[in-house]
Image (cartoon, rainbow, N blue to C red; front, side, top):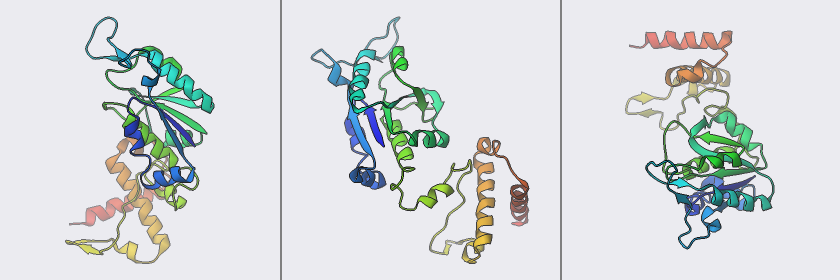
Length: 245
């Protein structure tokens, strides 16, 4: 997978891509990350990439020309799906992760200051946002997208089966996890996880994932299509909750 990041601060991205599993994927050649700064394509001695907005207003706006030239320079590496990172866009979610991870190349365009010249939008294939909040720039969002998509690539995650059980893999939050010690300050590991009965454990995990999603993300829960087994599991969970003192 080839990632290209258009950013005024390549050092922010480069500092993170060589760490952990992502760093191993980069070292192994499974993932390639290239950063390019629009400042390379300016003509004044200050390497200006922004200007005051037409019509007045506070702050500075990123100019279209340096970004356009940066994207054109990246075309020498081959065609790439271009994504503009902006809070005024559709929210990045696991469905987008799966879709983007299937692409051979992904170009992420990071903003700064008060935003982009509107004409930048005509240079990209789509726009994405991490959520309903504002960051200083798009680099954190770019890194989130790189890590989320790269981990779905072959040979990046050691145990690929774990990907199927993670939060959002099938629209559910992940079930609760426990490890040693069995008892911590009066809190015990659920007995079912110590039973060795894999059928019971699988049933308990499904039940807890459903209940957790309903409690913490009712928006996700509302989109689920529950079958009779799922409804029975939730009824079982609710019955146990009522029995607890």
